[in-house]
Length: 246
Image (cartoon, rainbow, N blue to C red; front, side, top):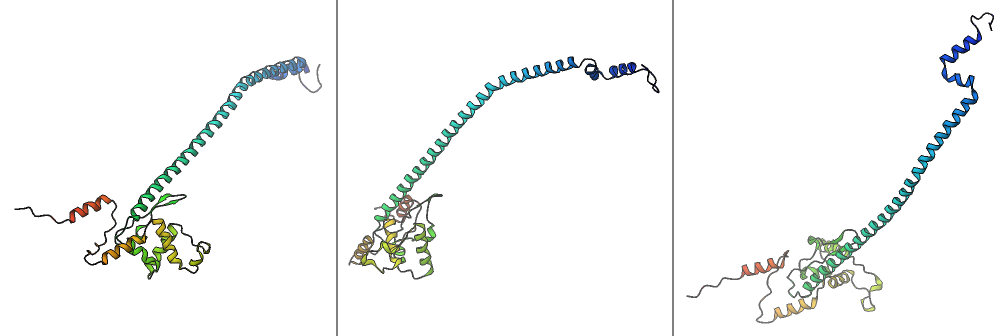
């Protein structure tokens, strides 16, 4: 059919449109067939998705099982870590108690007030075993018992440090009836004496024997040594050599 004012015919134009634009060829000439084609494509896509889902289901089950195994493994690792911490704490406690016991025993046998006092460690909740600062620790019994009545800043600092280091707490409830009004410094030294294992009676008897007629005077104070073996070697070197017999 010819259209007025337009060259050519409507059929020719439609043929040109169909040949140049293939996607429009099917909908124009066969809409039912296009719908069937799209439905079949969707069916194939749905089948592929279902097959992929079937493959993913076992993987999902395996992933859940692996996650559960990892959770149980983490619990075991946490349990082992907790046990190691407890063992470490117990080991520190054993070393701490043995070190204190040895130092207390050594101090309990001291008689000469000029001999060095063995310092006792303390057990810190975070740092573990800690040792006192030797510059703030009394060198011998004479220096220790002088802290009952500190007369200078150094003695007051030393007593304050020892009270803090060994966590000594003095309260009114600890004092008995005959100790009411006791000097807190004397009470602190008394508690430190028990902690360090010192026995003042040993030093008193030593002084009494030293004052007896015919008794040799007390030997000079010995500096604190890091090892008892070094003290023995020093004592051997200080012995006078004997002259060979003629």
